Length: 151
Image (tube, rainbow, N blue to C red; front, side, top):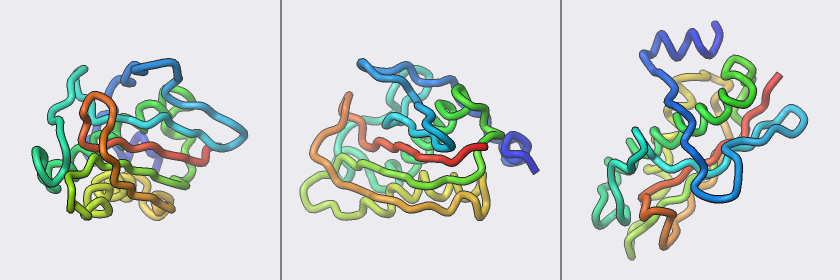
């Protein structure tokens, strides 16, 4: 089954590519790898939530926002090579704007990882980093970047 067919089966539509906030491009291909820029959970041009996870944003909310970040990253990949060119997810890096004492970054970034597993099955299993940070652009609670292998 193609990735686009799987997305349809899951009822998932890739969003439009989020315009870069500065001097970079959403995704770059080198050889058989595509690297995405860090993607914020922007929907319809807006962040649905802002602030630190563990304070203004709950871990559960941030988990859902990480899923949105992953969808935005897949949209960036799709715009460059087409989603059906993806053969596996190699690595996910998630950044979580964390309130003091919050240490649930892995659970938050699971929002992205679980989506990739739903979409790609075994080819969605990946290496990962989940990093707590003090601030993210636009006061976003979470940011995700992907490295995927393509045909």
